[in-house]
Image 1 (cartoon, rainbow, N blue to C red):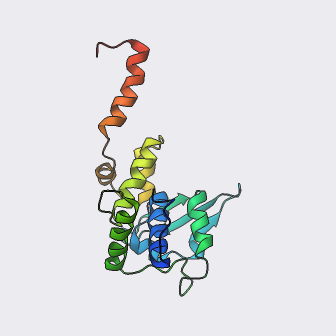
Image 2 (cartoon, rainbow, N blue to C red):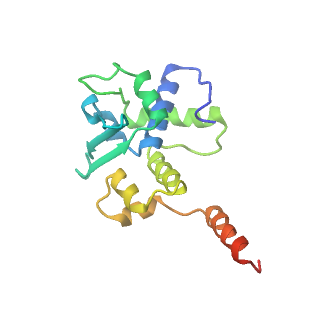
Length: 172
């Protein structure tokens, strides 16, 4: 819903895109605001990666850029000041916009910019990325911090155990 929403203003589209970028990279607001072209590294295989030291922890993060975040970078190229990739509004303005976006998309929940790190961790876990890799990408110095983001949803457990039950038999 969020990706496909037709939002009425540039401000709402911009906020949505920053939120989505962060969902796909796990980057926090402060790191997003400080992201520069120098932080984008092209590997030998042509893939693009973000290399940053997190502002909060100073931990090095290496995050592969998927297609959606790459398109968002291209869309806003040149809009950031002082070599930054993006113009990132103050947190209170982002929160106000996210509230409107959630209402317009009919999400039935309160979006916060902080949630996108949790969403990133959950998406990565659901795709089989290890807890250690997620911790490194989020810039956590202790894996226990990552486990807070990585609440395992009962539905996911049931689905994964369901496959095992089908293989070995189940008594319900």
